[in-house]
Image: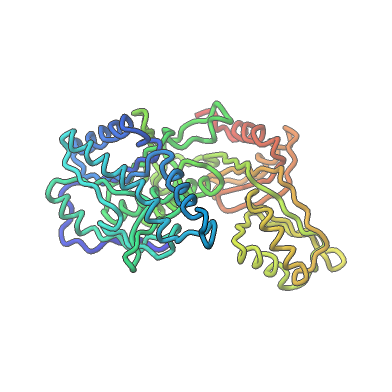
Length: 427
């Protein structure tokens, strides 16, 4: 992902800057908008120049998407179900614009000078990939002028403007990405992400009641956890924060409890061997039996899947016997039918006997930067799972992660077992 640089500034800000991002549940109604405004005022009173990034009110984007689909399927339409992506972006971007205006008005009523900004007004320049645009540049010149006048900014997240002058949206996790990009462009001290949880936990507290909130976690660990199913932060936003050294604070919109700081590894004094356990239920295992064991066959398999938009995760190839091998991979459960169809269409080019699909699996992972300097993580992990009778189907590793694919019915047991085995419940 390319960086979103700001336009050069001739004058450095006279006050420290802070970016605050409020998700849909945090601005779901006027009471919550007032609560968010009070938090902003508190930071203004503390001496910060504040840029607030807002999502649409909870449920609003889904409502707007439904309107678009309804409009595209009216009787008499030449292409039922088809809609112009440019108009789609124009409609769905309005949700964040409503929230930004309401929050700016609320701040003004509280005595905080504030103005709302749509993405195109800043401007946030993006690619022209409507519905999945990428931020290319944020020109902060106008914001700098307003900050110098004592004004604070409330910015509609999830959106920008293409070179053609059309409104664009950033896709899944777009408001988090917007917040991090603004923090980088504005030289902010920190980016606070307000959500419905009060930080990053050692695992999902709904699965393990002894899960603990982490005071700090490294960018790399957070990126792994986000990609492995943790729902606290979106992968794109963590990647951008890591690339530009933007510290993130995950905080609750509904309490004043301390949050979790996502920061460079060097700023964490005590590094646990394992910092967290992630679990993802919606996985599937696909095996191609009796694949011809020859150069290029893996490229044929995974090239076909990639061209069809199927994201493959774990990959295992069995030992070759009599010129044939079995190839196993995992993917999202929602992609299974598409993967099967793509592989069947490419059967002659690949050369396999049969496709076997197991949709009753889950992925469980242990993550920690301490793995770099400590041995025995795999031994502890596999021993704990074996002691509880959990069979491992597929294994994959990285420098700071070990993931296994197991029967879905054992997912919660596996998480609880690993959480205890690595001492994450002891504080």
